[in-house]
Image (cartoon, rainbow, N blue to C red; front, side, top):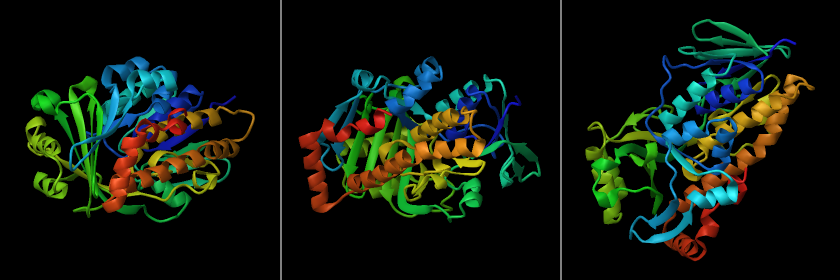
Length: 398
């Protein structure tokens, strides 16, 4: 029987994870990435046990352990007073409850890990400097054309080309993503360059009015990922997620936060490898998925941010893309049914969970950035309920 071929638009974490998973399921994969070289912007990602479980299943436990950190605790603090509001044990507790660890990893390290793993699979072809222009689905095959005029034919097409996806625009024609009005300032800090009091091996979320800050270790704890999210308008095109940023702008946006958080923000220029410590990302998303037809039609499917872009307030953007990849591979391995039916089964298996994560992410952002009496109620609830609020069993159990 002829080996079936999946075409993938996009070589980020979702596209590479899909290439790896689908190749493991016996398909040939041809991936097309617009960049001239594989690279990822320097930022961290959190991988809950729902995600690390999949990576372990793919045989990547050792590779992940070599590049990630495994924080043993999640702490939530009031950004104004500095007081701890609540905490959740990770580490051994995640292993006991969910059978897999909680990991934090530099995005570039995760990207390189997936590139290496994908290239070790027979039948995976990664093509750079090839940006999808359009596609045609005639019900029997799908043809992808790049901006350079290359035309490739396959049995299915996966749009994994991000929040501004060209595949989605042609498949659904549902307009552009919505700009949220939230700005993420992000940087990576060398922990050895920080004062001892500012170093940390745990995940800490600082919650304040109309802002929050998240910090956690990466690269075995040698580096710290630091992200501050505030309200505001992007200085340039929203679709560019890597604007330069000025530290004084962030310091003004922080307002009256507590001294330890101010000190951490101020230490960034001295703890990075260059003087331009901060990068700026204007957050964009879409409303939660409303049905399977928004994730697959005919021979074309969507995954990751192309399918369900979400705000980062549940730390599941990369995780949902990796879950998509695993489910897509399971669906495409169903040889007894035709390809459109397999893609429909993939979408049916994914859309409700993805919609729930999108909705929870939106709600978390409202809670994190709340003001007035709502903020006081939030703090009191976390103090009272702690672990019951911070744990997410329906998500982490997979």
